[in-house]
Image (cartoon, rainbow, N blue to C red):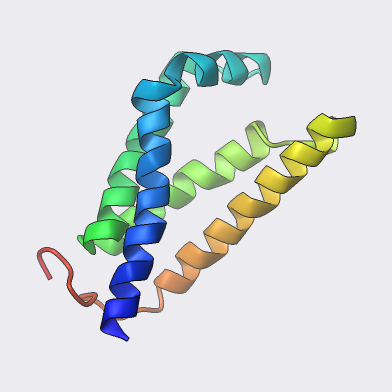
Length: 129
């Protein structure tokens, strides 16, 4: 089971790290424009700030290093983004469908993060554990 936990952490943490790369390098411009369109204050700073949350949180999960802090960082990313960016209740048509999917996906990720809190520390194969 320890190996399965590690594989799950690699996949789960890697998901957030990929999104951090997108926020900080690959898609920063497009994400900034989208955040601006959604009315996010200081959209460029919000995109880079959220990228840092994704990076630190994703690394924490992947490495098992201070996972409770990583979980907090990722929840601090997911909840505001879900409310501000994926506000499906304010959309119509295809935009409503896309935001509904992303909102519910983010809430599922929050649920998974909360479930991770039940795993005793140190996690198997963790760095610094």
